[in-house]
Image 1: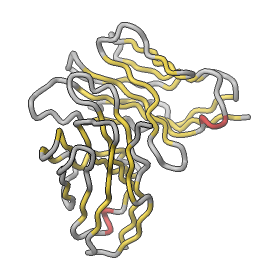
Image 2 (image 1 turned 90 degrees about the horizontal axis):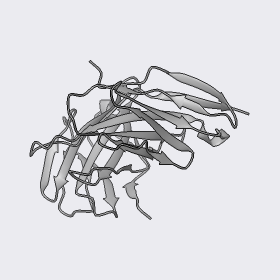
Image 3 (image 1 turned 90 degrees about the vertical axis):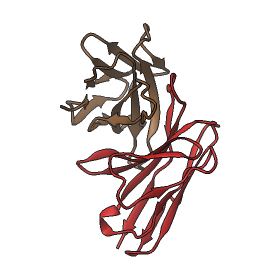
Length: 114
Length: 119
């Protein structure tokens, strides 16, 4: 079954404690990205990756890091989380140009930073 | 200007009836794709249907169909025979596919429509 798997689904942490949200896809997609969803602001892209070792900033990258060492994995790292990073996070993967007809999301990670 | 506009914050539909959720988009690209997602209260984003700008036929997936009117830049989602499980937020999204070498393939989302199915 084609899927994007995020872990954990729920996370409560304290300010400043480094954390990693993992993302893995089994569809051999080149393109992966991270979004955050906030009330009234919708979904905003944090970082994206066109392929292994190729990453770039999205619209709201401050406070986040990513890496893409393998095609299937794209972890999101918060080195020093702050309360304004409390949000619902989604990892997405999709086929690349020129088709890009699929775009699947993980189950979401609800992060609370206190 | 917003790239994706969903003008209906909330909609109600009777069970077993059809419902249309509106989406208009704004792009100067000739090559783009349009997506619809369902987000139930549990939070996950479920991919429903895709329409490419060059597709001549309207996309269909089971009870979902996309009414694509390119000249009007609209991509409305039609759900036939609504079920109670269709109650959710629905998001329209667009990906502009002009390849620029560093293109982000970013999905731009609308604000969503909350659909409530009444028994």
